[in-house]
View 1 (cartoon, helix red, strand yellow):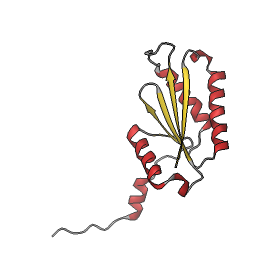
View 2 (cartoon, rainbow, N blue to C red):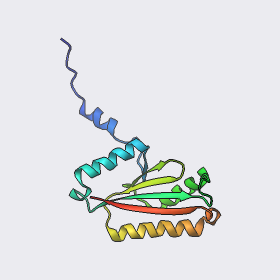
View 3 (cartoon, one colour):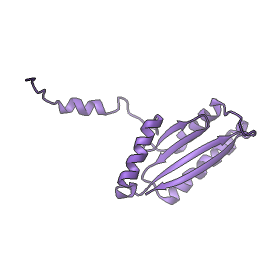
Length: 141
């Protein structure tokens, strides 16, 4: 019979932690984002926080099948970084969408964040006005 290895709890906890202290929202790949979303649906975000909200930002060009350049998405992510918190997460979906999960937020603060993002995008980044931004919001139960 094999020997049972004793767990080193400090090592396990250290392996779970981030190596560097983060000061901005967390970028996840699509599968990681999906797992967090499903977890929140399963346990109900209101069970332990004020609320969680999904934001879906979708870009379209002036022509229906026009590809959205990566620099547009990257510039928009830079805008998001100004207004989202360290507790929020996002992912890029396809070439024209960004999904964000806002945690522990109420309706008033959510509306304020969305308004600030829209204002920043429309004022500072006039080079990209030919791309339309649509925002879909959904509160998690």
